Image 1 (tube, rainbow, N blue to C red):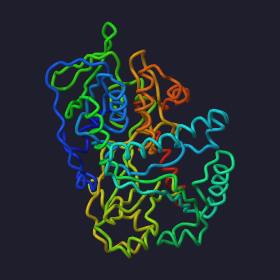
Image 2: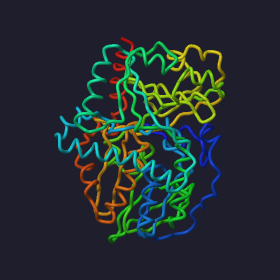
Image 3: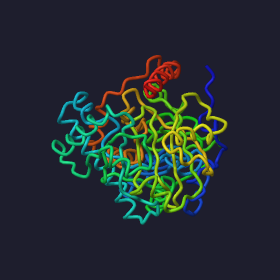
Image 4: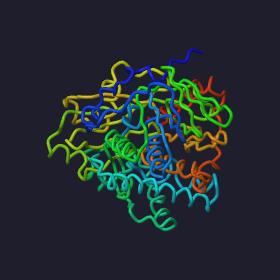
Length: 438
């Protein structure tokens, strides 16, 4: 089966997509392109949240770090996503208690809380201008879901001591959101939302100041161990020699590492951005300026930008190619929730590729003694990927506690491996999409 290069299947080399985020990106000094062979302590592959956070935390520990990004810093999912900094892991604590037991489930909750804390602390410490706003509203699109949501809120409060979340009934939901689409849910004020590309650029600048060497347009074609050193080869012929390597490629890993690829799969998500809305209309849509994530299996996630645009994510594809007209692909999902926006102009539409795992939990592994990876955040990566960089920096330095908790998670390979994972996933997703309509 022909597999196109995900780095170029839908995008131009070295260029950010024509997104709202790219149009409003903070100005930063350019990063160099790599020329000639180099050596360092640690080489990081991938310039998204995972790689940038790894580079920053390693450089702060005194390691000589080189980061190689195939396109531009924050070019991938880190600079294209919904910007939601959510609580917990991708799976709810009920599920995790069944998967790993109550004690380890509590450890996973604690790590997830740290993931939100690190986002907030990096924003404060490095004065990153990324439009942080508190609050995520979970909205149930079926009345039968509300009781479970409310029970889960009460579980988090009573068993996990998490008191920043509360239940929302149908009447209040309709006051908070200008739509009849939802029946209730929960409001989490310990969570929040950001401009993700500006957050990535801020981490990159902090890593550069700390001493990390960051190279853009450095496509890694392969790596191999030679006499205890990792030799990383790039498409322009440059080779980086390092003691250890961190793979932070996520949805764009492609054929670089088959031992990881069989457990993660790239899928595509899409977002549109309207023209700026009046203050009155913006507050009618989302009264309290929180982000929203709903209960559909193919989730709708949306929020207001700093300049009052509706940023609405909806729809997925499981092939390699993006739809030709992303605005038309996503708009029906937005209009199902907000029919009053039918005459509002859509200024931007863009897509991105993320990585999922079979059980939707992230895949942390020490593949070899000197090769580490974290990937497969399954749509929950803004905070967790950022923390993953710190966790891997700790692991490289010899502190394995949190890395071990995450790497002990059993992440099954996709049935059929890398070759057959697509048709099997498509069949499953079609079923779940039909279920959403029932």
